[in-house]
Amino acid sequence: MTSVALKSITKSWGSTHAVQEIDFSVRSGDFTVLLGPSGCGKSTTLRLIAGLDQPSAGSIHIGERDVTRLSPSQRRIAMVFQAYALFPHLSVRENILFGLRVRKEPSQHFEARLKRVSELLGLAHLLDRRPGQLSGGQQQRVALGRAIIAETPLCLMDEPLSNLDAQLRQEMRREIRALQQQLGITMIYVTHDQTEAMSMADQVILLRNGRIEQNAPPAELYAQPASEFAARFIGTPPMNILPLEPTAAGLAIAGAHDVAVLPGRGGEALHLGLRPEHIRLSAHGAPAVIQTVEYFGADTIVGACIGNAPLLVRVPGQLSLRAGDAIRLQWDEAQQYFFDPHSGLRRHVDGCGQHTPSSASQFNPIKEKSCAESC
Ligand code: ADP
Image 1: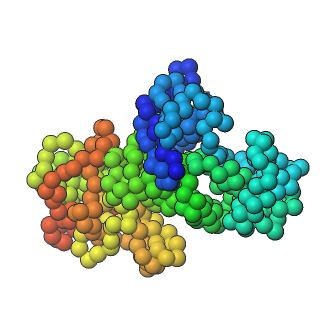
Image 2: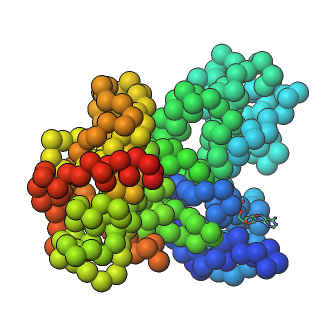
Image 3: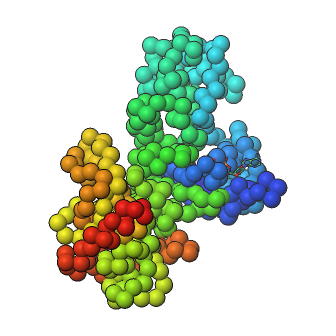
């Protein structure tokens, strides 16, 4: 079992800071995902842990060892990349055994290790084939086999599923997670796909512009996002962000001043965050006009406007409503999030007020019309 710790890691390429002041630790046997948009520093972080690049500042520890200046081979790490990099002229057997042969490990154990790994990955009947005779998923399994057979306690994966189709990705996600748990491997896994991160990880490190935006287990990242960026990165569709502005009645959704989200509160503007799955259609609530209706089978995503603010609502099943229809929307106060519009950081606002108009009589068809035009 192996833990990993990065302490104040910075990597610069000339004046470009790929990652800056990165600090995190990974517990032994945990599945940690480095998540974030393209260019945020995920691969750089992984390459630094692997020893493929040297940090400009900071130190890296694997278990008790400071490995910052050690070569990749001295770090005892297995790696799987997006490109499987299988040798086309070698059989599946030889591809899996390749690393062991290069490292001149004792060959008397090869067959037993190969048997175990190939059975684990469902490759036992394919050992004599060449990579060209395998499907994409099977090729990816060979790449996994090559990593697993090394029996290193730490495994790094960089977008290993990007080349697979959606269904296969889902299968492989489950397989990788099950294998990691079964073998007790410490895993650090790079992806830009939040679904992958949420479904596989014990711990998610969300990166943005080379810095850590939030480091938390998936459930906490979803329920307690530290910032607007984190809130919108997790969840499909992403969290709705509705600008609030001061009105005589309190802070209200822009363009819908009869919908006082924080009654009696004045002062600075805030952003209101609402997850699509937390909003429901109801007889009472904020007046809205439907813009779009997308049916997905199990649920429907309704695009609507409250005042000037567009938002998406996830409704179970199918709807008989259409674009242009007037509806009312409700949500629970406890499921409102507030963000500072300047820093983007989450704000804890006490005494959240009502979000619904004080009475249905405030329903204003003229406002609804202007909403439809402006959104
Ligand atoms: P991600 O994996 O999140 O897409 P990377 O870690 O590959 O991001 O890159 C982070 C930043 O560092 C990017 O701006 C990228 O252009 C830059 N970068 C990465 N590798 C190099 C390199 N070898 N030379 C110069 N800039 C690099």
